[in-house]
Length: 319
Length: 199
Image (cartoon, rainbow over all chains, first blue to last red; front, side, top):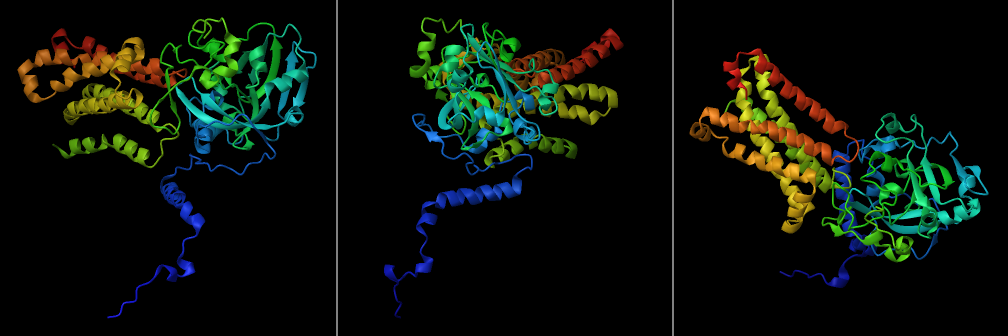
């Protein structure tokens, strides 16, 4: 019998796998598996979110990339501590889908010890500033961490415009208090509204960000829409969400968590592997998406940028 | 084993089956390790509360079949507690003995959880009929009152580990208090000689 052997060159073009398909074959497999899983098992309550098309354009990038792998968008938007929408990780993503109510204008008041106080609509507030993309590590006091590409502008830019006077030693931030929009506030788990604060030099540090988005798109409710603080060298709860008030003050603000547990949560709350939470170690952390735990770094790895703020301070006492 | 008992045996495996299934299908959220550790612990607690419910339920309903479930449910407490413990030792501490010892000594909620787990062991060892005979019913019952201590310790362990919202641990504490109260009530209802039936 004369069996004709096909030679390599004879494969019809229609059967050649497109290079891009070939290169993305794993993604395809993962994708189809995920789809199958999703269609079969996905409960309607879980929004397994795809990373949306970026809505912010012309973002300034530079100097704030990390080698760390970004945490999946889905994790960043479904695993949240935002007690204003319930105390478990999943409820903010479920209860904050319509937050903030677009029919109500978002007003931010800037007041206290400054020469240019004012009340601004959200759009007017952020208009003067250049938005940047910055990838920061985010370490929760509970012992888990993420890597998030934020969109925002340095808080220092806003402070310079407000012109704090010499009595302004601290900046105090307040979250919206609205039990209709934030059902978690109906239970007095914390002393609402949520309050946080920074020393003025911490607030002026170039790392301190006012964020309005992540992954190139506007913040979702569960992430602290429309505007939040991001202080990457401090535990996550310092990065207050959904801000309506920024106030320059002379006295150290008493934050919501300091009131809730003065022994457990201090004003500074700098990430510090050597100073444990009274109930658990802060030595290691679980990076979301990773199996092994990793060592927690001093100031969450931002020692070079911020250590000078605390020179001479006993960080175990000023925890 | 009666059909009833087999049914309860299978139903008791539902939580672990559901957990494994959820884990494999990525349904446990962004931090699945935390989720399975928490859930196995919670199920150990729930089975312990169920075990403690059997006796009062028997008093109320007089349904004898219930009593035959108590040992099995008790062993399920241990089953879920072992899973919980292994997950802690493996995925939280990665079997680092030094860290584990430090953690147990330094963290009161870990200490209490650990003591609670260890206290289950003598109860498991003496759970078969041969051991009941060997110890004698009286001694055996006395030993198994350790369950009350374990339940209390477990409730405290849960209360202490929750960061801020203590609602759920308080609910379980209230339920435990009810389970204890029924026993105290029963104890004073009956003449002293019947007190030994307390278990």
